[in-house]
Each structure stands twice: as C-alpha cells, then as structure tokens.
Length: 464
Image (cartoon, rainbow, N blue to C red; front, side, top):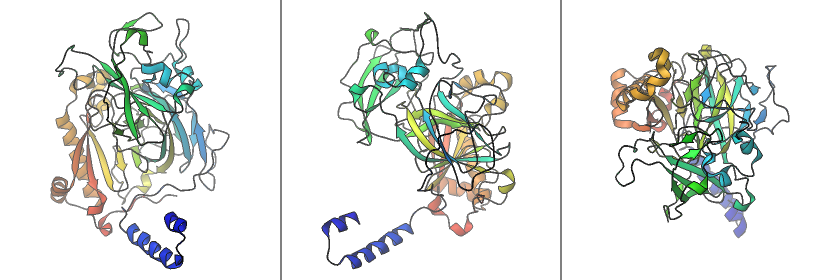
C-alpha cells in the first residue's frame, strides 16, 4: 500500500479496492484459534502494585526492572515474595539478565548499572549472595490475583527486545554467550585435542539485523572467584572470566550468520512440592523448557500449583537449535512484554484446555505439548529428586510422555478416539528434542492447527 502511495498512481481508488480484496482473501488463510495480543498495549504506569485490588475496567501495563531486589538466582520457590501483583489480562514488561554475562564483562556487564549491581562480587561483599542450586537469573515472581491450584495461567509473549550493551564503545550492539560445557551432550564425544574441554563463543547481535555473528571464542581456563575459590570448570554461576587468562580466537565461524530466534529459555510458575526448586530441570510447572518456539506471538499455558501462580522468567536466548546440544543457547539479556490471562478451573470444562496439566504452547499455526523423562520428577523421585534427576534422564520416557500428552490433547480438544489420535500423531505430527542438557530431558510434540475442521475443535475458555 505504501509503495502505491509513493508511485502516486492516478487511478488510486481501484488499486486500493483490489489491495483490500487481496488482503481480506489472504487473511482467510491465516491460522485460526490464536488470540492476537492487543495492538494498543496500554502505556506503562509509574507505580508497581504489590497487593490485589479491584480489577480495572481495562488491562493495565507495568514494568519490572531487573535489579538485585527483583531477581532470584538459580531457583523457583513458592516462598518468594512477589515483586509485582497483577490482575488477569494485565501486561508486564519484564527485564531479564543472562547468567552468562560474566563470560565477557566488557561487552555484557560494563556500563549497565543494573547488571553491574546484580553481578557485584568482591572479596568483601556479594550483592546477590543466594545463588543456586541452579544457575539462571530469574526476574519475578509475578503474583496473579485470583490464581489458585487447578487453574491455568496463560502467558502471552507480546514482544521480546534485545538489551543493548551498556558499554558506549559497542554502539548499542547486544552480545551473548554460548558455552560448550561439561554438562553438554557432546562433552564425552569430542574428536580433537585437547579433550575434554569447555569452549565459550561470544556472539554479536546488531538490532539493525536479524542475525548473530561470532565475535570470538576461547577455551575455559581455571578462574578464581573473589572468595578465593578456583573453578576448574564452569561450575558456579556468575563467575566473571579474567580475559588475561584466556586466548581469544577471533577467526570463529567466519561468514556464518545465525538467524535470531528470541525466546526465554526459562519461564514458569512456582511448584508446590518443595520450598526451593533447582532452576535447571523443567517439569509440569514449566521452568527451564528451553523451547525455541516460545517466541513473539505465542502463548504458554501453565498449570497453577500455588496461590498467585508466582510466575518468573529469565534465561533469555538470542537463538537456539532443538536439543541445546552443547550446553547453552546464545545466552543474552532480553526485555519481554507479557500479558497474563487467568483461566479458572471451573471454566475449563468443555474447552480445548480441559485436562491440560502440563506446559502447553500455542503458536499461530500449531499446538505444542511438552513431555519429559518424568512428568513431575519432584513427585516421582521423592526426597532426593533434585539430585537423582540428573542421572536418570532419558529420551525414551520423554517421547512416551510427550506422545501420551498429545494423544490426550487430541482426544479431548478434537473429540478423537485413541486410535484416531495415534494415527493422526503418526501421519500429521512432529516430535522434536527440546533439550538434553537440563536434567529431565524434554521432547515436544507439534500438531498443526490447519489440519482440523474448526467445527470439530473445542473452543478456548471465555475470557472475562
């Protein structure tokens, strides 16, 4: 349309009419069933609510800036005090900080006051001293008013924006880190010497482009943290690499452009089974799914396990392939805009979401179910679950869990019999390895929306 205006065609009205027809005809082929986020997101309000009140007549929009007071490092917890309280349909702009910023202090920490404060660690003090048992810096939690166990929390990913480097000499570019580490699937399958080894590759993302390029790489060398401990491997979050101890190899992946796939590797609600839950293994509550499909324009559904849901997010990725094979994605810092929609348990009966007790992703053209080695490893493995899960992970049960969940989703949401569901799964669905590096390995099953007659698909719950 803008090109037509620039050319100033004399017969503009017939052109406009034909363009309108084409657009309307094309729109009829767009995927159905995905509720689009409002194009008119409300402006950000100056105050951040910390208690529930009466819901406003229209959604509100708040911002949670990353700071030592608004992040928790390495765990989900039902006992964390929320940093914000929202009502259903409200929007939250959430700043997230990567736990790999220490791989290049100059590019990913320096000049950014918030990241400098979060990472501040000297022999005398450590701003965020409670790190672990996991590794991820998570922002939150967000308390959703009215959320109770048995409900579903829908989190719409409205927008994701790279956080530029705070260092003026990098001109607003964003950087990220990929760590080929000891927990990666490749670690005991290396071909060249020295082996084993851990290698960090630093990537550069320019907001003017939609791809990442490698800036350089280096082999991890023992690092001494401010408390005097020597880290032979990447074994503690937030250790800042002393680049005087490593050799940077600038000739890395020359001529390669990696398409950006912005997403948060870890988003979820607080589980109920334990007071502190390792941020690394994912489970029924979401968490560290590492699914690259959780992108702008999608929506995640999480089963609520504790009052208020207590949603947190972090572990932002600029790009990642299925499986996250070597240990991490391109770990970076991202600011996300999310809308929270609460679906009460009583409203789920007779809808496509009835019976969903696992993380479910809706994209514009697909439904994606997430399966794991253990659907709920915290419950299945008992007192030592958070240790044992790392030694018991396998893809066989993860595929079995994912396919069973997809079967159930089709039987309920599309009124198929079990035999119909498994036939359709086999001929019309795809399974992908979500990750093999987090403990509780994941497989996700993808079913396209377009293969169904809309008349045979149950509706989504009404939004009040």
